[in-house]
Image 1: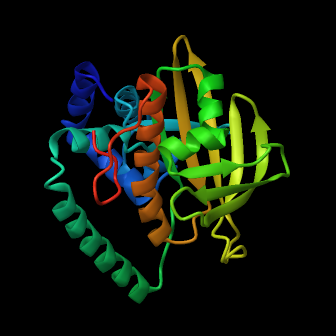
Image 2 (image 1 turned 120 degrees about the horizontal axis):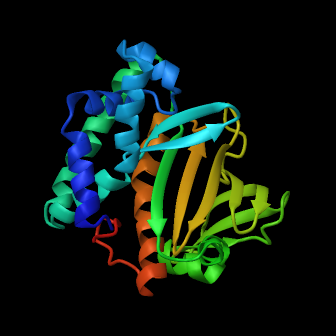
Length: 266
């Protein structure tokens, strides 16, 4: 969880209207370069860099290098933790229902216009653990069963299949192929519904990047090639809950309690 010092940095970053506008632009189109952001906002590179540095320090924006480019992604983790801290479990169902109605209306409007640009999803969390411990938590079937409610089954070698088995129902919910496995730093897998292995545009891809610094691991999860905004909305709810549970398990030895709506509660 974000401590009070980290929370102060988040609120300070959000207090500036220009920085809120940068976050809005990344929400509309995630993964932009500095040049793209400057062009959309008529802002100098120096000014944009200063604002982005503050957003990055507050962990509201994360930077992913791709070749010579630096891509900027909105990181919802701190805002998610603010929500978890101040919205009670009694208010959550009502607000989730309102959000669901809003999402359905937006998806309906988008379907009318027949325009759907699905951004990549990036989520960053910091875990007090070692990189080998985080890697094991991602790939060990017994551990994933505890915090994810699914057993991740594979030998985790490049080219091998992996399967995501629901612990309660026994159903096979997700399947894919291991594309890269550089233990304990980088794991890349395809991610697909077993009933629809050949969606238009191909399967989505999930990358787990583990960066160790002293006693903390920065875990970046990037979910790319998403087929629809419906799936984007689903994983936007799912990944924060799963990773909060993983963090809790590694840092405290126990998982977070779950509400009747299936979301972890802090």
